[in-house]
Amino acid sequence: ILLISLIRVGQAQAVIKPVLSVEPNSPQIFRGETVTLTCRISGWSGPYHWNKDGVDVHSSAENYYTIKVDQSHRYRCFVSIDGGSAAWSNEVTLSVIERPKAVLTLQPDGQIFSGQEVAFTCEIRGHADTEWMYNWNKDGVQIFSYTESRKYSFTPVESLSAKYTCSGRRRSDSRTSETSNTVTLTVSDGKAPLSVLKLLSSAVAASPYVLVTIILAVKCYRARSKTSQCSSLALKLNPDI
Image 1 (cartoon, rainbow, N blue to C red):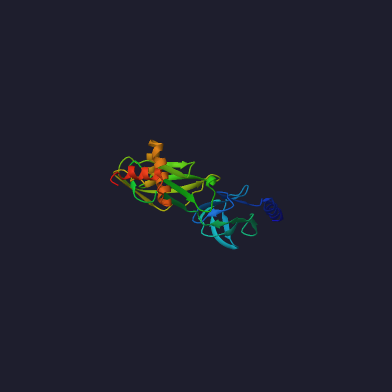
Image 2: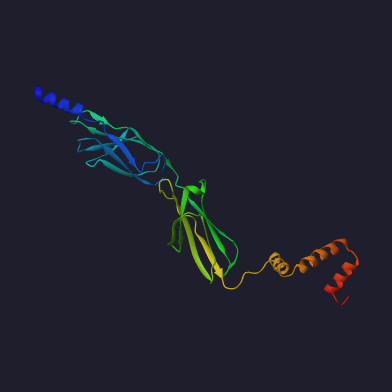
């Protein structure tokens, strides 16, 4: 009997302290994310016990424990030796933060015509652009998988109506953001109306004389001048006077 007791004591002293690890191993975990806690101890085949914030919460024959995290907690695992003393692992703290959400915007934001360039921008608020890669979806179907740029632009050549979303994947650990808001792109047939500035730019590019005439007209109007230059200009603009 004494010999058996000595053997058991020797076995208990030989038990190595369990080592607890978490996967994915990150300082911060997004709320709602699934993680796996693994309890490793040499020469032990189970059972394993799990403790959260000082309270025993789970026991199993497997050395892993998969959970969906909702808030920050402290975890440890332990094994019972001969139903008596427990060998405890190191403590692992899961620090939980809200999952970042992508925000999708479209320019221009008014009426859009075929042949007019449109540009989408996917932004992960509160995070640097260089931290993320970007995924693009049209009507629920992926069109680009995690591109380098947060901008996506193209020129529609025909009328269409489609719903777009985006999301981000962090470069450092491949964790994903929430999907963005939905932006509906509606493109009409026809050409976009030219603005006054564009019309003037086109006219000046075609003939520098037009620019000189415009400048002189503005100058004469402001000064209410009766100079020969202004009289000549007035005659050209209104030959009936």
